[in-house]
Image 1 (cartoon, rainbow, N blue to C red):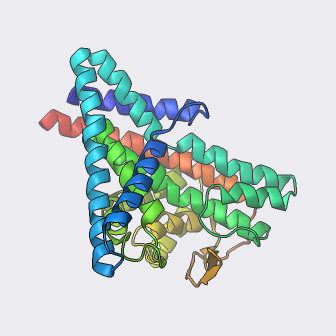
Image 2: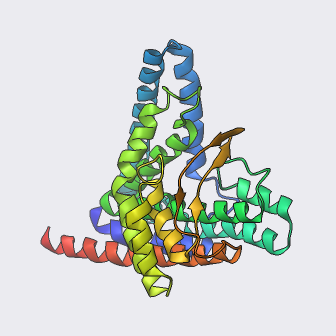
Length: 323
């Protein structure tokens, strides 16, 4: 099985670049999301609605989702490889493909750009609401553009580099487990009244598994900025200065590089669920952000993905020659 991991990862990566996420195909993340919802409902019914009870329920949720995300794809791959190595390879390649989001991230963010080009602010607000968690109803063109660019920057790590990292370590099972943790955090890892205690374990685990990939993503994005002729020196400077300007230890890593490479200012105050959250800015406003920056962000996304695949492949082959 181990001998098929690299070919499966590379196949999955290139299929994602070509096909993205077809609308007709039921995505594994939906399965994970349904499992999280069902487990949460069951656990909340069984555990007392106290701080201790909710923390314990949240830990059991994490245990169940992580165990399921390892055992189920692991068992499927085991039997597929036992049936025939080619079947195992095809299944693993499909899992890797489904765990990546290069083309879909570009496609969804470019829908925002298209609406802005058509001067349709309502359409742009709706398009950006599909890819961000903040309130979008009152955003102007600058706010919409900034939200889209930030999403491309953050998801370069969460949706591309981190899954690739875990694929290289453990194939499709590694990618599926990572995606389950990331999805669980996006559903329950909030600091609001409902999830303050219940979602703590999921949020901390997500921070942990993203710690190394987020920093690798920033490095790869700097390299991509240099190759693609962006302001890579500013990317380095802003990264060193602003990489901690976020409540999450990981989110500002790629946002800082993106802000520096594009020479714009990102982040700042934002509304979530009707409440204003005051957040520090990232980057310097060397120039005003514009819709074209969404296209530039996607060029950096693709450049970063290619740099990551080349480096990961080289490291994988190098380590393989010693093991």
